[in-house]
Structure formats: C-alpha cells, structure tokens
Amino acid sequence: MKQKSISPSCSKKLKVLADPTRLGVLEALMAGPKNVGDLVEQLNIEQSLLSHHLAILRETGLV
Image (cartoon, rainbow, N blue to C red; front, side, top):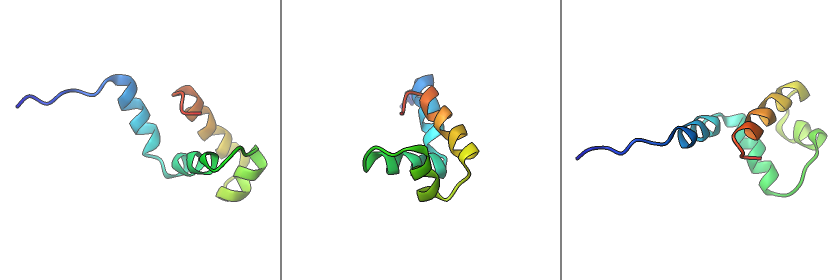
C-alpha cells in the first residue's frame, strides 16, 4: 500500500510541536491568557528564549 505524504505545512507544524519548550508554552496558554513574565516564571526559562519560541509558534500560526 502506498503511503500518503504529509503536506509541508503540516510537517512544519509537527516539527515545531516536537520541541518540549514550545509544547510547554502552548500548554500554559491553553490554561488561559498569560503575559511574557508569567510564561518566563512558569516555564523557568529566559525571556529571550521564550521570545524565540513564541516567534516560531507565531510563524506557524499556532499562537
């Protein structure tokens, strides 16, 4: 049986979601609106790293 290929946009989203930090960001945001300071504290990461991950999530339309 021939395997169907995944669309490029779907593949990119799956790669983005493979990162544990980005999954943590999404999980935190699913619980309700958060500002950057809240996310930095909750995820225990630097603000610059959070900004990097948020930019990637934004580029793929996940936030």
